[in-house]
Amino acid sequence: MENHNSRYARHYSLRDFGAEAQQKLADAKVLVIGAGGLGCPVLQYLTAAGVGTIGLVDDDVVSLSNLQRQVLYTTNDVGRAKAAVAALKLQQLNPDITINSFKMLVNSTNALELIADYDVIIDCTDNFAARYLINDACVLLNKPLIFGAVYQYEGQVAVFNVSDAQGNKANYRHLFATPPDPLEVADCNEAGVLGVLPGIIGLMQATEVIKLITGVGEVMINKLMTFSILNYDSFIIDIRADESANTHIPKDATTFKATDYNWLCGTSINGVIELDANNFLQKINLPDTIVIDVREVSELPKADFQNLNIPLSALSEKIPEIEANNIILFCQSGKRSLRAGMLLLEKFGNTKNISHLQRGIIALQEKYNE
Image (cartoon, rainbow, N blue to C red; front, top):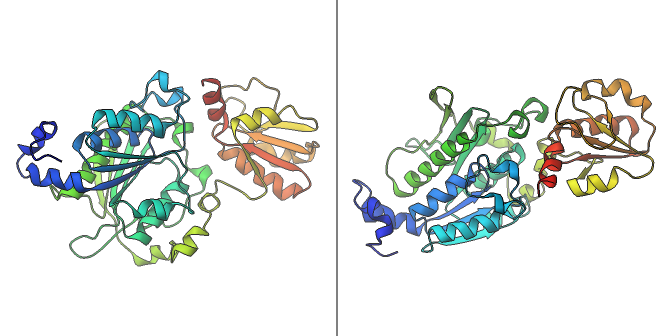
């Protein structure tokens, strides 16, 4: 980085920041996991700020429903890989930095190697399996983790795995030691989110990264901030770094790599086959197959293919009526269909082929919009 690069002129003239802090940004390596609603503003502002090396990880493609909040992408990008699109546009924004792009799903087999190369990790994901996985990997590798989450009109930001003045170091498991029941926690696909909210929370995450790297300001170490966009109410709680929560974290790399976080968080069940949108549409017309919508009768949108509507709440009573050998389940986001699959698995064991649509009707809508 040139000491007088006019790109950063406003940083050079900023009191308590200047060229020294700018050089710290240039020397830093930051990994952003997720290039969606939170990841877009994080990536854009860290790129503009001059973070020297930015890694971005995402295995998804741009869909039309993303554009309400993921403003790094345009309508012309629908169907393209987010990792590739984001890397191209970020490099155009700032060609002076290095952008490492990874089109991949972060899992227990690759997370440690990926995270090890970076100084600060930013969790911009939208599901519990990823959050617990990233948290545990950062604890094992002693990497600072900047956490963000959004739900409807409310967001959260925290800085994990950084010691405070007393040597206390909190992580995500000090908030939630073990994963909640996925049916008890709605995600943005089911509950929705106001499009501007991820932008605000993502900016807060990027701000904490800059403060942490440069030493400017007070970082939210061992604290969780909750912010409501409806009335701008916010509050900060202290997180107690109770060592008992760490007993849930794999003790070493070998144990971590053997941990199935999707199973741990109730997002996969052995014996229930997971179908993407393409496989689902191929299989629903096969012989001896029944397709069951486990949503409530009033839920929209209605499916445009033949199916039987048996809400999850009534499925146990209807199980004896299911005679087909191939049972395909779907719902709005994939959560209830997975739970329905577990009920059927308990009843039929391996005598029937039970599968469900990953990400539910949302996945079908995205496919139709490609």
